[in-house]
Length: 402
Ligand code: PLP
Image (cartoon, rainbow, N blue to C red; front, side, top):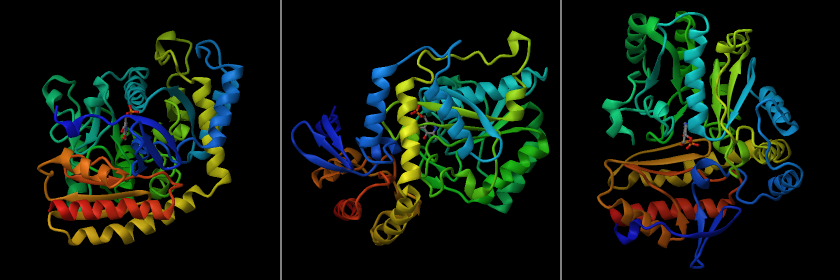
Protein backbone atom coordinates (compact mmCIF):
# COMPACT_ATOMS: atom_id res chain seq x y z
CA UNK A 1 0.00 0.00 0.00
CA UNK A 2 1.34 3.46 -0.88
CA UNK A 3 1.79 5.77 2.11
CA UNK A 4 -0.87 8.15 0.86
CA UNK A 5 -3.49 5.34 0.84
CA UNK A 6 -3.05 4.58 4.55
CA UNK A 7 -6.19 5.69 6.44
CA UNK A 8 -5.81 8.65 8.77
CA UNK A 9 -6.74 8.13 12.41
CA UNK A 10 -9.70 10.19 13.58
CA UNK A 11 -9.72 11.08 17.28
CA UNK A 12 -12.67 13.43 17.65
CA UNK A 13 -15.40 15.31 15.81
CA UNK A 14 -17.25 18.56 16.47
CA UNK A 15 -19.51 20.60 14.20
CA UNK A 16 -17.97 20.42 10.74
CA UNK A 17 -14.53 19.38 11.94
CA UNK A 18 -12.64 16.12 12.30
CA UNK A 19 -9.67 16.07 14.69
CA UNK A 20 -6.94 13.59 13.82
CA UNK A 21 -4.90 11.64 16.36
CA UNK A 22 -1.80 13.61 15.32
CA UNK A 23 -3.53 16.87 16.32
CA UNK A 24 -4.43 18.14 12.84
CA UNK A 25 -7.99 19.39 12.39
CA UNK A 26 -9.78 19.01 9.04
CA UNK A 27 -12.87 20.84 7.79
CA UNK A 28 -15.21 18.06 6.73
CA UNK A 29 -16.65 18.43 3.22
CA UNK A 30 -18.66 15.23 3.06
CA UNK A 31 -20.32 14.82 6.48
CA UNK A 32 -19.22 11.20 6.81
CA UNK A 33 -20.82 9.97 3.60
CA UNK A 34 -23.69 12.47 3.79
CA UNK A 35 -24.97 11.44 7.18
CA UNK A 36 -24.02 14.19 9.66
CA UNK A 37 -26.56 16.73 8.41
CA UNK A 38 -26.60 18.70 11.70
CA UNK A 39 -22.81 18.59 12.06
CA UNK A 40 -21.08 16.26 14.48
CA UNK A 41 -21.99 15.89 18.16
CA UNK A 42 -25.16 17.96 18.14
CA UNK A 43 -26.07 18.30 21.85
CA UNK A 44 -29.79 17.67 21.26
CA UNK A 45 -29.11 14.28 19.66
CA UNK A 46 -26.41 13.40 22.22
CA UNK A 47 -28.82 14.15 25.07
CA UNK A 48 -31.63 12.08 23.53
CA UNK A 49 -29.30 9.09 23.10
CA UNK A 50 -27.97 9.45 26.66
CA UNK A 51 -31.53 9.51 28.02
CA UNK A 52 -32.49 6.42 26.03
CA UNK A 53 -29.29 4.65 27.11
CA UNK A 54 -30.35 4.84 30.73
CA UNK A 55 -33.85 3.50 30.00
CA UNK A 56 -33.50 0.77 27.38
CA UNK A 57 -30.50 0.66 25.05
CA UNK A 58 -31.91 -2.30 23.17
CA UNK A 59 -34.73 -4.80 23.18
CA UNK A 60 -35.70 -7.28 20.50
CA UNK A 61 -38.31 -6.06 18.02
CA UNK A 62 -40.09 -9.38 17.49
CA UNK A 63 -43.29 -9.74 19.51
CA UNK A 64 -42.32 -6.48 21.22
CA UNK A 65 -42.49 -2.89 20.08
CA UNK A 66 -41.37 0.24 21.89
CA UNK A 67 -42.24 3.88 22.09
CA UNK A 68 -39.22 5.37 20.25
CA UNK A 69 -39.91 3.15 17.22
CA UNK A 70 -43.66 3.76 17.28
CA UNK A 71 -43.19 7.52 17.50
CA UNK A 72 -40.53 7.50 14.79
CA UNK A 73 -42.75 5.46 12.44
CA UNK A 74 -45.58 7.92 13.02
CA UNK A 75 -43.38 10.95 12.38
CA UNK A 76 -41.87 9.46 9.22
CA UNK A 77 -45.34 8.62 7.89
CA UNK A 78 -46.46 12.19 8.61
CA UNK A 79 -43.46 13.66 6.77
CA UNK A 80 -43.57 11.40 3.73
CA UNK A 81 -46.07 12.15 0.95
CA UNK A 82 -49.29 10.26 0.29
CA UNK A 83 -50.05 7.04 2.12
CA UNK A 84 -46.44 5.99 2.65
CA UNK A 85 -47.21 4.92 6.20
CA UNK A 86 -45.99 1.37 6.88
CA UNK A 87 -42.45 1.44 8.24
CA UNK A 88 -40.01 -1.48 8.40
CA UNK A 89 -36.86 -0.67 10.40
CA UNK A 90 -33.42 -2.14 9.72
CA UNK A 91 -29.88 -1.01 10.32
CA UNK A 92 -28.24 0.15 7.09
CA UNK A 93 -29.06 1.64 3.71
CA UNK A 94 -28.14 -1.57 1.88
CA UNK A 95 -30.49 -3.61 4.04
CA UNK A 96 -33.32 -1.10 3.58
CA UNK A 97 -32.99 -1.57 -0.19
CA UNK A 98 -32.59 -5.33 0.20
CA UNK A 99 -35.89 -5.33 2.15
CA UNK A 100 -37.55 -3.18 -0.53
CA UNK A 101 -36.48 -5.63 -3.24
CA UNK A 102 -37.71 -8.58 -1.23
CA UNK A 103 -40.97 -6.76 -0.46
CA UNK A 104 -41.56 -6.05 -4.16
CA UNK A 105 -40.88 -9.67 -5.14
CA UNK A 106 -43.10 -11.02 -2.38
CA UNK A 107 -45.84 -8.51 -3.19
CA UNK A 108 -46.35 -10.45 -6.42
CA UNK A 109 -45.78 -13.91 -4.93
CA UNK A 110 -48.42 -13.21 -2.27
CA UNK A 111 -50.83 -12.46 -5.11
CA UNK A 112 -49.88 -15.73 -6.81
CA UNK A 113 -48.04 -13.99 -9.63
CA UNK A 114 -44.82 -15.99 -10.00
CA UNK A 115 -43.41 -14.35 -13.12
CA UNK A 116 -42.68 -10.87 -11.79
CA UNK A 117 -39.40 -11.22 -9.95
CA UNK A 118 -36.91 -8.99 -11.75
CA UNK A 119 -36.02 -5.43 -10.82
CA UNK A 120 -35.66 -2.69 -13.39
CA UNK A 121 -32.79 -0.44 -12.27
CA UNK A 122 -30.58 2.12 -13.98
CA UNK A 123 -27.09 2.59 -15.34
CA UNK A 124 -25.06 4.76 -12.99
CA UNK A 125 -27.12 3.60 -10.01
CA UNK A 126 -25.78 2.54 -6.64
CA UNK A 127 -27.92 0.82 -4.02
CA UNK A 128 -25.56 -0.89 -1.60
CA UNK A 129 -23.07 -3.63 -0.94
CA UNK A 130 -25.14 -6.73 -0.13
CA UNK A 131 -25.50 -9.35 -2.85
CA UNK A 132 -29.09 -8.40 -3.75
CA UNK A 133 -28.28 -4.68 -3.90
CA UNK A 134 -25.05 -5.26 -5.83
CA UNK A 135 -27.18 -6.97 -8.47
CA UNK A 136 -29.14 -3.75 -9.08
CA UNK A 137 -26.10 -1.43 -9.23
CA UNK A 138 -24.56 -0.46 -12.53
CA UNK A 139 -22.95 -3.71 -13.72
CA UNK A 140 -20.33 -2.03 -15.92
CA UNK A 141 -19.25 1.26 -14.39
CA UNK A 142 -19.93 0.74 -10.72
CA UNK A 143 -17.74 -0.46 -7.87
CA UNK A 144 -19.25 -3.96 -8.02
CA UNK A 145 -18.59 -4.56 -11.72
CA UNK A 146 -16.24 -7.46 -10.88
CA UNK A 147 -19.31 -9.45 -9.81
CA UNK A 148 -21.43 -8.61 -12.87
CA UNK A 149 -21.49 -12.13 -14.33
CA UNK A 150 -22.21 -14.02 -11.12
CA UNK A 151 -25.02 -12.02 -9.53
CA UNK A 152 -28.76 -12.58 -10.15
CA UNK A 153 -29.69 -10.99 -13.46
CA UNK A 154 -32.01 -7.98 -13.36
CA UNK A 155 -32.58 -5.31 -16.00
CA UNK A 156 -30.22 -2.34 -15.73
CA UNK A 157 -31.04 0.21 -18.44
CA UNK A 158 -30.23 3.87 -19.19
CA UNK A 159 -32.26 6.39 -17.22
CA UNK A 160 -34.81 8.01 -19.59
CA UNK A 161 -33.40 11.55 -19.41
CA UNK A 162 -34.60 12.88 -22.79
CA UNK A 163 -37.59 12.29 -25.11
CA UNK A 164 -35.69 9.70 -27.19
CA UNK A 165 -34.51 7.96 -24.01
CA UNK A 166 -38.07 7.95 -22.71
CA UNK A 167 -39.36 6.40 -25.95
CA UNK A 168 -36.78 3.62 -25.90
CA UNK A 169 -37.44 3.04 -22.18
CA UNK A 170 -41.18 2.72 -22.91
CA UNK A 171 -40.46 0.22 -25.71
CA UNK A 172 -38.27 -1.81 -23.36
CA UNK A 173 -40.94 -1.84 -20.69
CA UNK A 174 -43.68 -2.92 -23.12
CA UNK A 175 -41.58 -5.97 -23.99
CA UNK A 176 -40.45 -6.90 -20.47
CA UNK A 177 -43.00 -5.60 -17.98
CA UNK A 178 -44.62 -9.00 -17.44
CA UNK A 179 -41.41 -10.24 -15.77
CA UNK A 180 -40.72 -7.13 -13.68
CA UNK A 181 -41.69 -6.66 -10.03
CA UNK A 182 -40.60 -3.05 -9.57
CA UNK A 183 -38.67 -0.09 -10.93
CA UNK A 184 -35.88 1.02 -8.57
CA UNK A 185 -34.25 4.44 -8.83
CA UNK A 186 -32.34 7.03 -6.80
CA UNK A 187 -34.45 10.19 -7.15
CA UNK A 188 -32.80 13.32 -8.63
CA UNK A 189 -29.22 12.21 -7.87
CA UNK A 190 -27.39 9.00 -8.63
CA UNK A 191 -24.90 9.35 -5.79
CA UNK A 192 -22.08 6.89 -5.29
CA UNK A 193 -22.41 5.85 -8.96
CA UNK A 194 -21.05 9.24 -10.09
CA UNK A 195 -23.07 12.13 -8.58
CA UNK A 196 -25.18 12.52 -11.72
CA UNK A 197 -28.37 14.58 -11.50
CA UNK A 198 -31.63 14.21 -13.37
CA UNK A 199 -34.75 16.32 -13.69
CA UNK A 200 -37.98 15.71 -11.74
CA UNK A 201 -39.68 14.94 -15.10
CA UNK A 202 -37.69 11.69 -15.23
CA UNK A 203 -39.32 10.57 -11.99
CA UNK A 204 -42.76 11.57 -13.22
CA UNK A 205 -42.13 9.51 -16.36
CA UNK A 206 -41.13 6.49 -14.26
CA UNK A 207 -44.20 6.89 -12.03
CA UNK A 208 -46.49 7.02 -15.09
CA UNK A 209 -44.74 4.04 -16.71
CA UNK A 210 -45.02 2.00 -13.51
CA UNK A 211 -48.73 2.83 -13.29
CA UNK A 212 -49.32 1.93 -16.94
CA UNK A 213 -47.83 -1.53 -16.45
CA UNK A 214 -49.01 -2.09 -12.87
CA UNK A 215 -45.43 -2.18 -11.50
CA UNK A 216 -44.23 -0.96 -8.12
CA UNK A 217 -41.98 2.10 -8.01
CA UNK A 218 -39.23 2.04 -5.36
CA UNK A 219 -37.32 5.25 -4.64
CA UNK A 220 -33.98 4.80 -2.92
CA UNK A 221 -33.73 8.00 -0.84
CA UNK A 222 -30.86 6.70 1.29
CA UNK A 223 -28.67 9.52 -0.03
CA UNK A 224 -31.28 12.15 -0.90
CA UNK A 225 -33.61 11.81 2.11
CA UNK A 226 -33.68 14.46 4.86
CA UNK A 227 -32.98 17.64 2.95
CA UNK A 228 -29.89 16.87 0.88
CA UNK A 229 -31.44 17.99 -2.44
CA UNK A 230 -33.24 21.01 -0.97
CA UNK A 231 -36.54 19.40 0.05
CA UNK A 232 -37.06 16.95 2.88
CA UNK A 233 -37.36 14.13 0.32
CA UNK A 234 -36.30 14.34 -3.32
CA UNK A 235 -39.60 12.85 -4.54
CA UNK A 236 -41.39 16.02 -3.36
CA UNK A 237 -39.73 17.95 -6.20
CA UNK A 238 -41.39 15.64 -8.72
CA UNK A 239 -44.72 15.63 -6.90
CA UNK A 240 -44.90 11.83 -7.03
CA UNK A 241 -45.54 9.17 -4.41
CA UNK A 242 -43.50 5.98 -4.78
CA UNK A 243 -44.92 2.65 -3.63
CA UNK A 244 -41.88 2.00 -1.45
CA UNK A 245 -39.16 4.38 -0.25
CA UNK A 246 -35.87 3.55 1.47
CA UNK A 247 -34.25 5.86 4.04
CA UNK A 248 -31.03 5.75 6.07
CA UNK A 249 -27.82 7.85 6.33
CA UNK A 250 -29.12 11.21 7.68
CA UNK A 251 -32.07 9.50 9.41
CA UNK A 252 -30.21 9.62 12.74
CA UNK A 253 -28.28 12.77 11.87
CA UNK A 254 -25.32 10.50 11.24
CA UNK A 255 -24.95 9.23 14.79
CA UNK A 256 -26.11 5.59 14.71
CA UNK A 257 -26.93 3.00 12.08
CA UNK A 258 -30.65 2.91 11.29
CA UNK A 259 -32.71 2.52 8.15
CA UNK A 260 -36.35 2.36 7.16
CA UNK A 261 -38.22 0.83 4.23
CA UNK A 262 -41.57 2.59 4.05
CA UNK A 263 -44.44 1.17 2.02
CA UNK A 264 -47.81 2.49 0.90
CA UNK A 265 -50.99 1.00 2.28
CA UNK A 266 -51.72 -1.15 -0.80
CA UNK A 267 -48.27 -2.77 -0.56
CA UNK A 268 -48.78 -3.51 3.13
CA UNK A 269 -52.18 -5.04 2.41
CA UNK A 270 -50.58 -7.68 0.17
CA UNK A 271 -48.81 -8.99 3.31
CA UNK A 272 -51.74 -8.69 5.74
CA UNK A 273 -53.09 -12.22 5.81
CA UNK A 274 -53.93 -15.20 8.01
CA UNK A 275 -51.48 -17.23 5.91
CA UNK A 276 -48.15 -17.09 7.80
CA UNK A 277 -46.33 -17.62 4.49
CA UNK A 278 -47.53 -14.18 3.42
CA UNK A 279 -45.62 -12.41 6.20
CA UNK A 280 -42.44 -10.53 5.33
CA UNK A 281 -39.87 -12.79 6.93
CA UNK A 282 -37.07 -10.40 7.75
CA UNK A 283 -35.85 -9.69 11.25
CA UNK A 284 -32.42 -8.14 11.69
CA UNK A 285 -31.37 -8.59 15.35
CA UNK A 286 -30.89 -4.88 15.92
CA UNK A 287 -33.92 -3.71 13.95
CA UNK A 288 -35.46 -0.55 15.41
CA UNK A 289 -32.69 -0.24 18.00
CA UNK A 290 -34.09 2.21 20.60
CA UNK A 291 -30.90 4.29 20.80
CA UNK A 292 -30.93 4.78 17.04
CA UNK A 293 -34.67 5.58 17.09
CA UNK A 294 -34.08 8.15 19.84
CA UNK A 295 -31.32 9.72 17.74
CA UNK A 296 -33.63 9.81 14.71
CA UNK A 297 -36.43 11.45 16.68
CA UNK A 298 -34.01 14.09 17.95
CA UNK A 299 -32.75 14.62 14.41
CA UNK A 300 -36.32 15.20 13.19
CA UNK A 301 -36.80 17.70 16.05
CA UNK A 302 -33.86 19.67 14.67
CA UNK A 303 -35.45 19.86 11.23
CA UNK A 304 -38.42 21.47 12.97
CA UNK A 305 -36.62 23.79 15.37
CA UNK A 306 -33.69 24.90 13.23
CA UNK A 307 -33.98 26.09 9.65
CA UNK A 308 -32.19 23.20 7.96
CA UNK A 309 -33.82 23.56 4.54
CA UNK A 310 -33.03 27.29 4.61
CA UNK A 311 -29.41 26.37 5.32
CA UNK A 312 -29.41 23.92 2.39
CA UNK A 313 -30.70 26.68 0.09
CA UNK A 314 -27.88 28.99 1.28
CA UNK A 315 -25.29 26.23 0.76
CA UNK A 316 -26.65 25.65 -2.75
CA UNK A 317 -26.21 29.33 -3.62
CA UNK A 318 -22.70 29.44 -2.17
CA UNK A 319 -21.62 26.23 -3.92
CA UNK A 320 -22.95 27.51 -7.25
CA UNK A 321 -21.02 30.74 -6.85
CA UNK A 322 -17.78 29.31 -5.47
CA UNK A 323 -17.40 26.10 -7.49
CA UNK A 324 -18.15 27.84 -10.80
CA UNK A 325 -14.51 29.05 -11.29
CA UNK A 326 -13.43 25.37 -11.37
CA UNK A 327 -15.17 25.10 -14.75
CA UNK A 328 -12.39 27.14 -16.35
CA UNK A 329 -9.63 24.81 -15.11
CA UNK A 330 -7.99 22.50 -17.62
CA UNK A 331 -9.22 18.92 -17.20
CA UNK A 332 -12.60 19.90 -15.73
CA UNK A 333 -15.58 18.60 -17.67
CA UNK A 334 -18.50 19.82 -15.58
CA UNK A 335 -19.50 21.65 -12.43
CA UNK A 336 -22.96 20.98 -11.00
CA UNK A 337 -24.83 21.76 -7.82
CA UNK A 338 -28.11 20.59 -6.35
CA UNK A 339 -29.08 21.43 -2.78
CA UNK A 340 -26.12 20.69 -0.52
CA UNK A 341 -24.31 18.65 -3.19
CA UNK A 342 -21.52 20.24 -5.21
CA UNK A 343 -19.73 18.28 -7.91
CA UNK A 344 -16.66 18.96 -10.03
CA UNK A 345 -16.34 16.29 -12.71
CA UNK A 346 -12.98 15.83 -14.42
CA UNK A 347 -12.36 14.74 -18.02
CA UNK A 348 -10.86 11.54 -16.65
CA UNK A 349 -9.88 10.05 -13.30
CA UNK A 350 -6.72 11.74 -12.01
CA UNK A 351 -3.50 9.82 -12.63
CA UNK A 352 -2.75 9.97 -8.89
CA UNK A 353 -6.02 9.91 -6.97
CA UNK A 354 -4.28 9.28 -3.64
CA UNK A 355 -1.95 12.20 -4.31
CA UNK A 356 -5.00 14.43 -4.89
CA UNK A 357 -6.55 13.29 -1.60
CA UNK A 358 -3.26 13.90 0.16
CA UNK A 359 -3.00 17.48 -1.16
CA UNK A 360 -6.54 18.18 0.04
CA UNK A 361 -5.66 16.96 3.54
CA UNK A 362 -2.55 19.15 3.46
CA UNK A 363 -4.90 22.07 2.80
CA UNK A 364 -6.79 21.17 5.97
CA UNK A 365 -9.93 19.77 4.34
CA UNK A 366 -11.55 16.35 4.24
CA UNK A 367 -12.75 15.64 0.70
CA UNK A 368 -12.82 12.17 -0.85
CA UNK A 369 -12.67 12.25 -4.65
CA UNK A 370 -13.59 9.03 -6.44
CA UNK A 371 -13.14 8.10 -10.10
CA UNK A 372 -13.47 11.40 -12.03
CA UNK A 373 -15.55 13.07 -9.31
CA UNK A 374 -14.56 15.63 -6.66
CA UNK A 375 -17.61 16.43 -4.58
CA UNK A 376 -18.85 18.23 -1.49
CA UNK A 377 -21.80 17.10 0.65
CA UNK A 378 -21.19 19.13 3.81
CA UNK A 379 -23.29 19.21 6.95
CA UNK A 380 -26.15 21.69 6.61
CA UNK A 381 -24.80 23.65 9.59
CA UNK A 382 -21.39 24.35 8.05
CA UNK A 383 -20.23 27.95 8.48
CA UNK A 384 -19.96 29.91 5.20
CA UNK A 385 -16.24 30.54 5.84
CA UNK A 386 -15.59 26.82 6.28
CA UNK A 387 -17.46 26.07 3.06
CA UNK A 388 -15.34 28.70 1.30
CA UNK A 389 -12.19 27.00 2.55
CA UNK A 390 -13.44 23.74 1.06
CA UNK A 391 -14.29 25.20 -2.35
CA UNK A 392 -10.99 27.16 -2.45
CA UNK A 393 -9.01 24.05 -1.58
CA UNK A 394 -10.68 22.07 -4.36
CA UNK A 395 -10.05 24.84 -6.86
CA UNK A 396 -6.40 25.31 -5.89
CA UNK A 397 -5.54 21.61 -5.67
CA UNK A 398 -7.15 20.93 -9.08
CA UNK A 399 -5.36 23.96 -10.54
CA UNK A 400 -2.01 22.69 -9.24
CA UNK A 401 -2.56 19.16 -10.52
CA UNK A 402 -3.76 20.16 -14.01
N1 PLP B 1 -28.53 3.50 -1.46
C1 PLP B 1 -27.92 4.66 -1.75
C2 PLP B 1 -28.59 5.61 -2.68
C3 PLP B 1 -26.69 4.97 -1.18
O1 PLP B 1 -26.10 6.13 -1.48
C4 PLP B 1 -26.10 4.04 -0.29
C5 PLP B 1 -24.78 4.33 0.29
O2 PLP B 1 -24.04 5.15 -0.14
C6 PLP B 1 -26.77 2.85 -0.01
C7 PLP B 1 -27.99 2.61 -0.60
C8 PLP B 1 -26.18 1.85 0.95
O3 PLP B 1 -26.22 2.33 2.24
P1 PLP B 1 -25.28 1.71 3.38
O4 PLP B 1 -23.89 2.09 3.02
O5 PLP B 1 -25.76 2.35 4.64
O6 PLP B 1 -25.49 0.24 3.38
